[in-house]
Length: 372
Image (tube, rainbow, N blue to C red; front, side, top):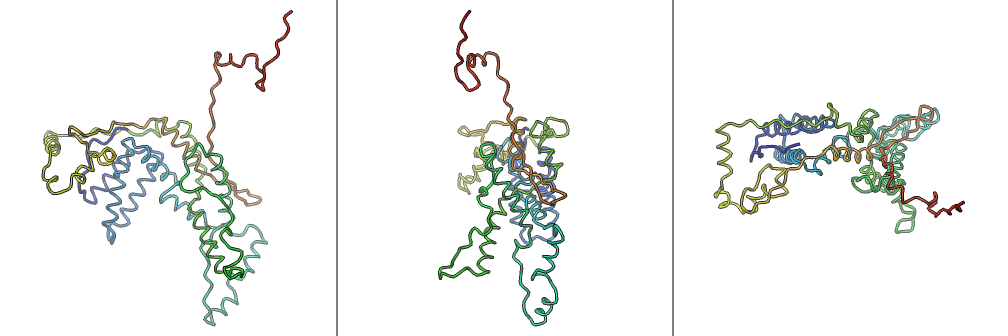
C-alpha cells in the first residue's frame, strides 16, 4: 500500500482528527478493519458530550493516527500490532473476550448443583440471621467468580502450545510456567505457623492476576476458520484484498501553499531547539508524520509496501496464538484447538536424489552386489 501523500496537520481539531482516523482505517485489510474502526467510533461517541480527560484522549488519538499511517506506509511492527488487536490477541477486544470467557457456565450435574446449594456461601436462613445481627457479608474474591476449571484448562493447553511453537510464533508477554494457583502460598509463616485463610486468598489472587494477563481467549469457530484461510493465502481474493489508496486531489493554490510550507521556516528555529523542530522529519518518524527532510543532509526513508507473502506469515503467527473452544455434550468439558504451522517441504529434484544413491534408509552404505 502506498504511503499517504499528505503530511499530518500540526494541531487538528477533534472532528478533523476523527475523520483522519476513519480515513486511514478504510485502507486497512478488510478482515480486521471493522474491529479497529468500531473501537475508534465507540471511543469518540462515548466522550463526545462531556469528557474531563479530553486532552489526554486527544493525545492518544493522535498517537493512534500516527500508528495507522505508519502501518499503511509499510511499518511491519505497526501492522502486526493492528492484526493482534483486530483478532483479540491484545487491546480492548482481548479484554472483552476475557470478560465473557471467565463467566462460569453453572453446575455440570446434579451433584455439583447440590454442592452449590449446600455450600456455606449460598444465601439462606443463616445468611439472613447474620444480616439481621449486623454481621457483614463475606466478600468473594474476584477469582471465585470465575470458571477456574476452564481457565486452568486453557492455561495448560496454552503452555503446551507455547512449547510447540517456540520457534515459529512470537508470544506476547511472559510464557505460562505453572498451573498451580497455590504456587505462592508458603507452608509456614515467619512465626512457624500455618498461613491463615486471608494470606492464602491474597497469594491466590496474586497468581490469578499474573496468569490471567497471559491467557489468549478463544475465538469463535467461524472467525478462527477465516484466520486459517488467511494463512493459506486467502488475502489475495477479491473480498479480502487491501484497497488501493485514492490519489490526492490537488489544485494550483494548494500546490503553491505546499511549496510555501516546504521552504525554510526560520521562526521555528529561532524560538525552539533544532531537535524539536526536526523531530517529525527524523527517519523513524517519517512514516508516522508524513513529513520529509528535503535538506542537503536529510535521510529519506524508502517507500515500502507490505507484500502478500508478509501478510500470510503475519496471519500464520497470529493463528498460532489463537485457540477455538469446543465443549463435550456428555462430560461438558472444554477442549481447545490451536492454530498450527503445516510445513510444506517440496519434493527433492532428480539431481538432489543422486547424493542418496547407494545408501539405505538408515544412511548406511549398501553393499555392492557381485557382478555376474
